Every structure is written in C-alpha cells, then in structure tokens.
Amino acid sequence: MAERDNRDESTWVVYELTGSGERLAAEGTLENYLRETLGLEADHRVFVPYLAYQYGTRSSVFNVMEGYCFVASGLDESVYLSSTQESQYLRSVLSAEMGGRTVLMTVPDSSVRELRDRLGQMVAVEIEEDMIVEIVRGQYRGLEGRVVSLTDEMAHVLIELRTLRTIRTIPRFALLPRGDDEQ
Image: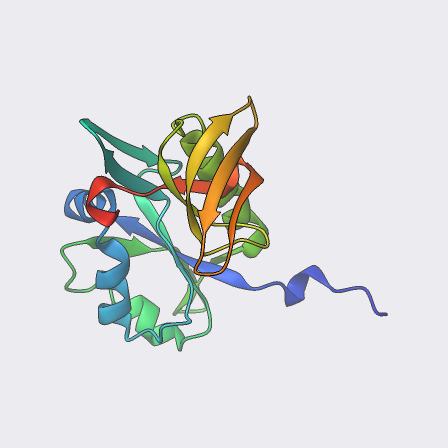
C-alpha cells in the first residue's frame, strides 16, 4: 500500500470574522450563514471553533480560535475571495498577492483536527452526571444518551434505542452537552 503524501490531505480556507461574525459564531448560527452565502452543499465541511450551549441555569461559550472560522477547500477560489466583499460578518479571507493575482492560502486538515480536539477537551470538563449528551466521535457517533457516572477521562453513558438499552464508556472529549432546548 502506497504511503499517502501530506499534499493529498484536504485543506481549509480561513476566514477572519468581524465583531458581528464573532457574535454569530457564539450564537451558533455562523455555519448556516456561511452555507447560504457560499452556496455550500450539505456535505461540504465547515468548522466554526466556537461552541455555545445552555444547560439548566448555566450558559457556556467555548472557543479555541476567537475571530476565525474554516471552510473546506474545493470551491472555485473566486467564491471564497468574493464572499468577504459585502459581508458584515466576514472581514477577510487568508490570501496573498502573487504575480499581481490574489491567491488563497489554506491550512491542512491536521490543523483543523487539532483545533476540534482542543475544543472537545475544553467542553469535556463541563460534562456532568445526568446531562444529556451527543456522542460526536467513535462507533456511537450521532447517538444521544444520559451520563450516569463519570471518571476523570471517561463518562458512562446510557444509550436507549428502540431495541437496545445499554451503558457504554465513552471518552469525555467525544461528548457534547445537549442544551435544554434540544432535549
């Protein structure tokens, strides 16, 4: 099997946000704005390194790279470059002038994965017993459950499906709290 060249790794376009864009990110609506503005298909990846949720009386906002967001490359460069021209939410796109032409600069997928992991680790400390969570990594990805107990690094999550009721041990960083309005 041939070793994969790092240049084959997917890349991400980096946007700098305005103050209004940062507010959208903290509210959790920036991804929808980007999808509509850029005309993205449902499977085109977007990463906004913010997470906000309301649980009980507590409201929390986490971010690992304030003022920026990421959209997977793959569209025509002109789509990315023109999206900031009249946007009140996007200040600029990471680019450089080369030979009298504006060229997009991108970051590797590994950098975005690292940011995702750091965000997951930040949220992991907020996981509490009896909290409803969504599993975002591993073989149970996409399922919801209730935390029944915790250790330093792991959570024991009760998952209930129509024909299955089981408790699984899941790393805390692989869980996202579901807000009260989502239960």
